Image (cartoon, rainbow, N blue to C red; front, side, top):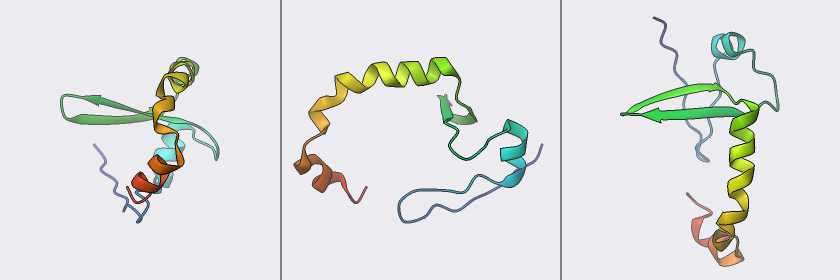
Length: 76
């Protein structure tokens, strides 16, 4: 097993290590999926079904789209 690390920026972004990008065949602009299961997180390249599911949910989350919400949660 190989363990690789990356630091979070102030905006909670992290660089995906080169070895992981190569293993998942990730390119700039690709979507990634995070699977959470019993305290374990798995990162993988997003599949079309993942993207379709996320797109289907977008319309149901409109209650969080106000400028007041953006201002309140901007620092998270």
